[in-house]
Length: 305
Image 1 (cartoon, rainbow, N blue to C red):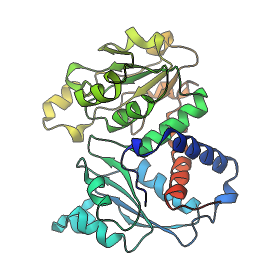
Image 2: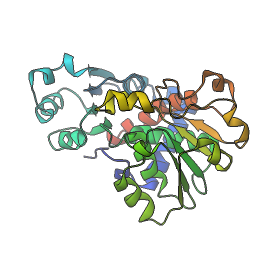
Image 3: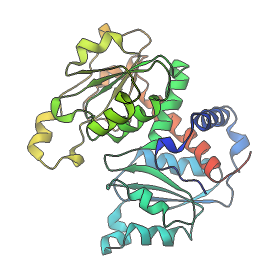
Image 4: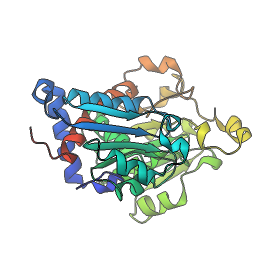
């Protein structure tokens, strides 16, 4: 039985196959509409989510399956003190596959040790978010046509941004990739991520506190929000939350074929005037998420279409 806890649980070949299947689902949705008939997905979301949870539910429904679960730990027995291990041990008897989000790093790994069915990590604290990374990779595949030789700018909260950590982890496996790390000093990329996935692999990288200075060299600009829920100090959050706001004016020096990505939700880090720019692909990015999750569910359930 295979789980997806970390993006490195998937080989490059497996990611390529997921992208191929997602492309086929996009082109031929009717072919897949009963692929998971009589299968059930349990969504165990111990912290709030809109896109990820609904994307998973839409994915399973699009495959003809069923969905059950909860969207808030307060509506589950976790409020009574039940452990993740016990919750998963019980729910794995009710479903065929689980998508789980939890505020504590490592919780999905614990879940996988007590589950009778595949576990998908839908985000664990500030650690990793592999299905968002699959969404990002499908977006890059559609918008740029390749993964090799790209300069990827990551802007905003690089310290707590699990989507950033997972994307670096994934993109570090492709040749000729360069990372540009744009953040205030307080929100710099954690040392373990930089050391393991950039320095040890000899990947070129630049750190900057100025988005404008590095904009002209980027092929991809990956914006993130400063996450209030990751801060212990409200004053620090308020001081840093508007550190980087992308505006049409700041895009004037960007490449014509650069793409702007964002895992969403945004607060105010991307001016709404940017939405009309053809380089803005964050809403297309959210759309692609459904189809790569459909492909992943098929893979983990070993369903052939």
